[in-house]
Length: 216
Image (cartoon, rainbow, N blue to C red; front, top):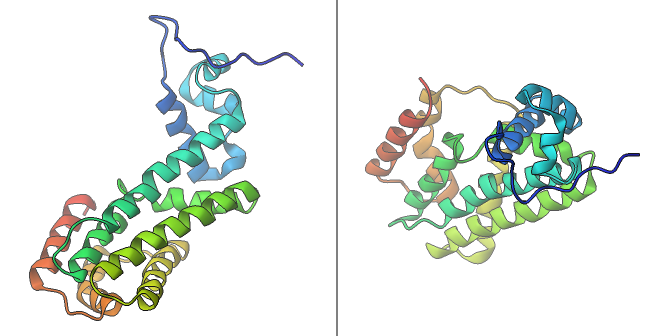
């Protein structure tokens, strides 16, 4: 079997058709559309319109690409949730509203990618381990958010799980709920998750944000 070239440290000047991000973007699209089994070097190179050898400027192997895909998922979806759970807010309902921004903005949290990675984990125990760790980080961040606003730790843990697992289940069921319906329920969602009545300006701010990021 011919030995595959090692990834190069420098690219040939004037001969760069695609970047590493292009390969990742293309692989991410195939993962979402068809699953990890369709993430193949030959088919990706055909889609990008480049030779297969250019793949090895950036990745050692298909496994290297798969590991990069998984790391990219953690850098985007998990990092976004943890960051928004930690944003400063005057009230716990405002804090949860900040977290809701991830769930209405696919640029922050790509639920299709999240679901695709979970499907991938059914075939790969190492991916399952990564998901378990990532879910733990997300739950820890949401639990810490509730604790910052005076929720007892055990109750904060339960509220974090209810909020997070409800949202993941929402995606798993592929519910097609119009934005108007989602916004109509915002006040009661916030009350259900926090036990506090949200302020009108918090609801209005979240609604304004949602309308800006969700195509109408």
